[in-house]
Length: 348
Ligand SMILES: [Zn+2]
Ligand SMILES: [Zn+2]
Image (tube, rainbow, N blue to C red; front, top):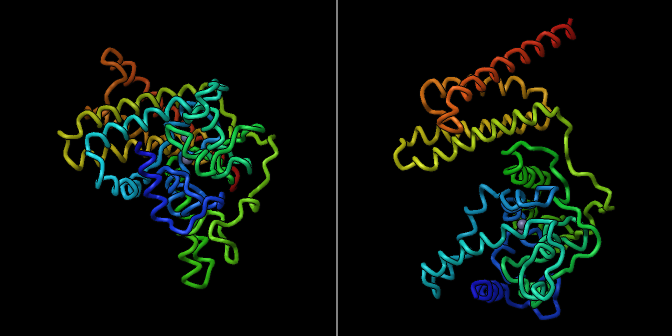
C-alpha cells in the first residue's frame, strides 16, 4: 500500500512521463530516488549499500550514514494521508523484510517471484552488469517494477558491487568517497550549470549527454571479475574478529546507556568506535600505516580499560580481555619499532 502511495507521489512529481518511456519511468518506491539513474548526490548516500562485491546477509547490513539525512523528505508527503503509527510499523517491516533477500542460497521461489521482491530479484538490483543497472527497485513488492518497466529477470551471472569498485575496507572512505568524487568532478567544469548538474543529474551524466548519462560508457562486465580480497594471515584475521567483537560490545554499551551519558562521553565513544573501525579497515587493506594507527588505538584501549570505559566481551572474561588488549598493544609497539628501523635502514 505504501509503496503504491509513494509511487503515485513520485509520478505526480514527474509529469510528462508517458507509459512507453521505459528508461525514465519511476520505479514506484522512494528508494528509487537514491539510485544511480536519478540524482548523483542521492546516489552518493545510497552507494554504500551497493559497494559490497559479495552478496550475503552482511551486505544487507552495509548501510549508509547519510541516507537518513535525505530520505525523510520523500516520506513526508505521506503525512497527509497516513497515520504515524501505521507508517512507523510499515517502515520497520519494510526494513526487516529486506534483510533476508540478500542471499545467493535461495535460487527461485516459484509463483512468489511474481509479486514479492525475492533474493533472485534483489541480486539483479545489486549487479553491475549492464542489464542490472537501475533495475528492481522494489522493497517488498516487485510488482511496482513490473508495472513501471524497471524489472529485469536474473539472467547471466550477476557481478556485484559498484561500477567502479572502491577496493578498500576503510569505513569513512566507503561512506563518504562519492561526495568528494562529485566535488572533484564538479571542479573540473567551468560553468555553474555544469557544476550543479554533476550533483543533481544522474551519476553517469557528462556535458553533452542526456540527464541520466549513458550507462554504456561504464566498464564492461565480463563475469571474470574478482572481488577485492587482500590476502592477510589467518592470525591477523582472528585478531580483527576479536577486536571487532570488542568494539561491537562498546557500541552496544553506548547504545544502551546513551541517555545517561554526557554529550562529551557520547562523542568520545563514537570517535573511538570510528577510529577502531578505521584501524581494522587499514589492517584488512594491509596498509603500511596500519601498525602505527593500531598501536595508538591500543594505547587508547588500555587507557579506556583502566578507566572503566571498555567493557569486556563477557563479565567473566574481564581478565582475559585486559590481557588480550595489553598483548595487542605490545605487539603493535614492536611492529611499529621494527617498521621504523627498516625505514631507517632503507634511508641510510
Ligand atoms: Zn539499492
Ligand atoms: Zn540490497
